[in-house]
Image 1 (tube, rainbow, N blue to C red):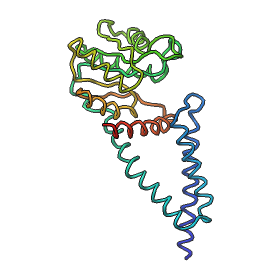
Image 2 (cartoon, rainbow, N blue to C red; image 1 turned 180 degrees about the vertical axis):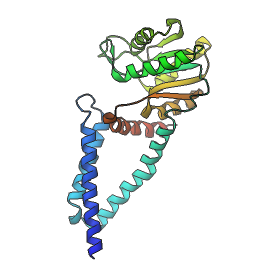
Image 3 (cartoon, rainbow, N blue to C red; image 1 turned 120 degrees about the vertical axis):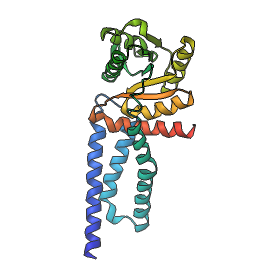
Image 4 (cartoon, rainbow, N blue to C red; image 1 turned 60 degrees about the vertical axis):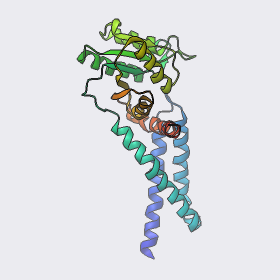
Length: 249
């Protein structure tokens, strides 16, 4: 009995501690990022903390059902998706993709956000190493942006020493699916290679791979790294988008 009681106490403490750590991690990026990832994460973290606090007063059936549900989500959804996110973050990058597709990200007025700037740097690095490669810069203009994401990326890449003649702008897309589908049109119209290198953040590459498959593009990837304090928020939001993509595949 003492061992059983001790085990329950350890589980309660573990639930509370994990909940607190996750809550702080989801709260950390709120000054700069507020999206569905934060929201879902904060709710789940609070649930873990409350579950731990009230663990001893819940009926045995409820406790088992909740723990079983959490383990099912962890092993059936979270673990496989996370594995594939890691797998496709840098995929087939040594096989010489000839068309780089840089996926758009937030523009602050006419200035690239940190993540957009990071993607441009990663693309420039590849383009300099592969002088025969060209890039499609894919991203439209949001209501709070002074220029399109594509135009912003062109400005950055030219400053980084990439010839404008190697850059193709796709400035109509408003989602990842459109980024890649509209870039496929650019590829077809200009006779470019369908062996593509997708440049985006690490959490985003797996979904980009699924969409490339739909569009008949040979997928390679080179990711820019997200700041650690933002990673779990984007990871959580991306999982929802991945589930939707896989269901509609």
